[in-house]
Image 1 (cartoon, rainbow, N blue to C red):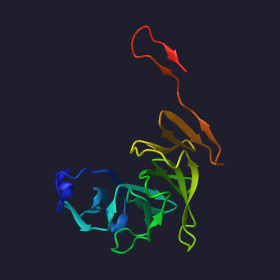
Image 2 (cartoon, helix red, strand yellow):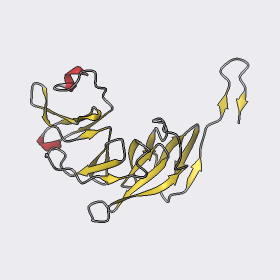
Image 3 (cartoon, rainbow, N blue to C red):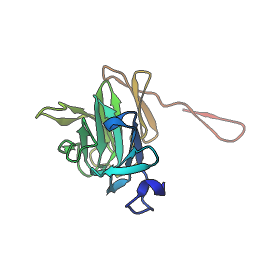
Image 4 (cartoon, one colour):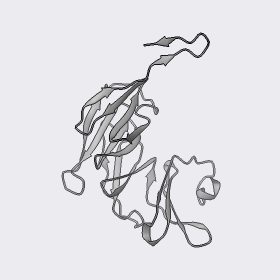
Length: 195
């Protein structure tokens, strides 16, 4: 991925990638290079990928409600109807308590859902002066940090699936949450089934 890191530290890890079939009149790929390196917006100029825009720091991307979103991984999400324009991103929308990092973004029912180390949030009032992050499910406010909580956060077959610790959950379109953790079994013969 060093070619994508042009102008940045080649050791910077790529943390998320999202592509556009026709962003800004051509194919585009947005690359998140951590929460300390600018977003690389790559466009195909006919012979090579170039980096025309550096917008802000990003850790995760999503498309939700017709907007492109990114999370800065600490506590904020931002959206844009045209992410190729410098200054085209919204003001920061804080999500939950600042000491719990954002770990995932996902569209569900046309809204942006945000996974954090301590729970699940949804963004309401996009494009209005009343934009806010509403808590959907918070496990504990005083929980130790762990980047693997609420990962993955994915919409599949009309439900939102997510994991917290070793437990899997499924959220229905109406907001009902059910535990859907699959059964566990031993890894050596004779196999044992655990509950």
